[in-house]
Length: 257
Image (cartoon, rainbow, N blue to C red; front, side, top):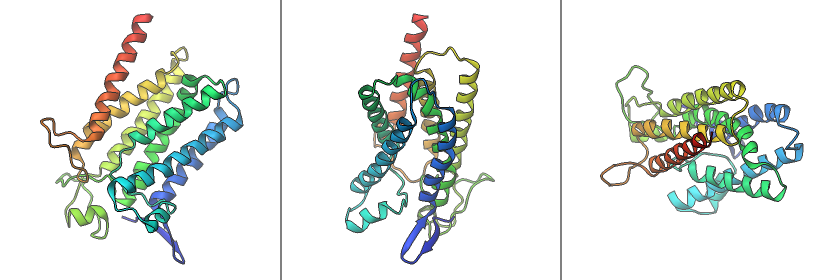
């Protein structure tokens, strides 16, 4: 694949980072056009994007601290938007929810209605990042497979170094395509059922994401599950927790109706 998009002097532009920037260019215009002006302003939208950017960069630093020996060179590499792989997106997602909640509380903005509007675009951004960023960077890759759509990554890539000359599952594409379908479903559902309760779109999106993540992760070849009876990864445990919580919320809301 092509983890490096191009290089200018000593500065390397990584495809992972370029895909991350692409998500902002794709998602920002429709958000600015369709955002509910009765509860949000342009300033709110831009502030939400700033919060997301800060959290994304922070998660990269945390990933380095946890997974690698951190030094100044690594810190500079974060600003290249390189993409390190292996770090669960759940902590960043939780941090974003908390930051948005605090912002909405401070400025007296309906929190759940705001999430229901923004979350489908976050899912679209995740789909773009998986399909282009992760696939090109060869992070989040799968295990060897004999299926006809197995991908042979070059030996210089992280996937190629682990599985030399072996075709592997393109789990990045599995994640990305299923996430894109979830985005389409949520938009269709939201348009058809305009009387949905506040938070329904967000909870539904989280439950669907947790299901797809849980099953696709079994095909991953770059992460090690915990040595327990269940043999699951930390991300899969988080997915189970999110799914159970989503079911409980749906059950409670249904009983109220």
